[in-house]
Length: 88
Image (tube, rainbow, N blue to C red; front, top):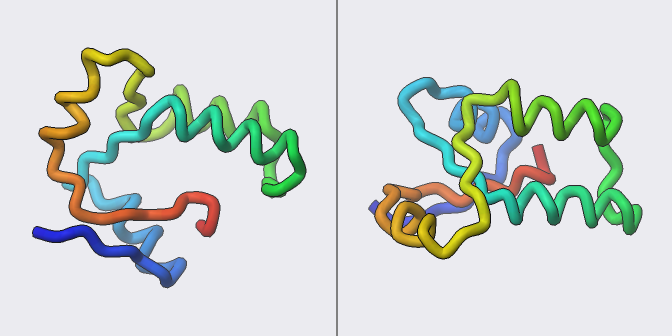
């Protein structure tokens, strides 16, 4: 199955909340979220502390650390959908 970009908000929410869909998020993506907020290129409805707490401790996502050993896991995953979380 090929990659596709989801553009509609309701479809993104459906894909992100599907229990059968394993979601892998690199810790680098979380870092980028913090950097964008610090640079004022991204404004969050909730505070940064609350958002980070939800992402890191209260989400169904698997957070991949930044280690070379995790690259094979990422490569082997069946990531067939590209979702831009900053647009949700």
